[in-house]
Amino acid sequence: MSDYKRFISYIYEYVQGEKKESLGFVKVNARDGVCKIQIHMRGFYTRGQKPHEAYIFIQKRERLSGQPLGELQNTNGALEWNGVTETDNLMKSGFSLEESQGIYIEGEDHIYAAQWNDFPVDVERFEPLRRSVRQAVGGAPEGTASKEERESEEGLKAAQIMADAPDAFDQEAAEPEAVQGERTAPEVPEKKPDSRREQWEYLTRHFPVMQYVEEGGAVMSSIRLDPKSLTRVPRDKWELGNNSFLLHGIYHYRHLLLLQRQTGEGVTYYIGVPGVYSEQEQMMASMFGFQEFRMLREPAAGKGSFGYWCRTLGA
Image (cartoon, rainbow, N blue to C red; front, side, top):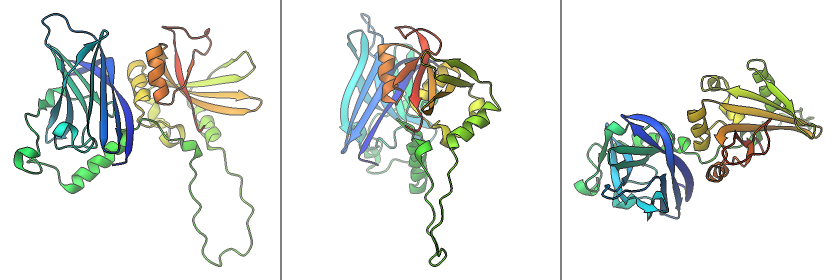
């Protein structure tokens, strides 16, 4: 695995196996073989209440096997756990961060979970590990996937765990090397088409466009996309990777915006993730590259205001 990995995943409550409200987050920071894990949840313990136990889990056969991390502590009205462990041997479990899939938290009659790719967790398949699965048999655990299967799974997880989407607009395919002797004179380079503008024009032919003029005269256009519509949008052109903050917004609000801002100096494109303004949400948004909060036609943002966390595309 790479020397450095940093990502954040949201923690959701699960009721009868169904994913519900987001109540916190888990932050993972791995560098030089050391992995720091921070869990933060809303809530606190009452007298006599059993503490919440946190686990980090992997997929093992048909089960989600969880290695205990420890009990969450009540800190200033929040439940937290902070720990440092080896990246390639999490909590002496025998499995690595690359093999892990998420966090499982169990309290009195409550279950919470976070999966690195932000997909729902099948919490009914969870079972805690009682000992290090690899130490238990003096090597690899019984039923361990083959080397090819592990490499395939790890490749899939690496594609899914993205703390930030790539700037696809700035990536251009390299020109193949010319065959020796094929060219006798330099060619005049052709003007490359503006892929962003082409894609935007394509989308405007298939989806409604809302427009308004900002105070400075800039024209802001927006296209609202629901989850079904997103299947028609090329991911490599609009940076719709598995960014956890983006997926979180789509899951809760069932849409996002593609935005075009046109001025006399040029055109800028954005992704807008719906949300409610707060300092905590601003911190989370900025970690995933969404630095600006726009309310479109409404006044300046204040605490509790609804709007869109925006990220410039191709900047």
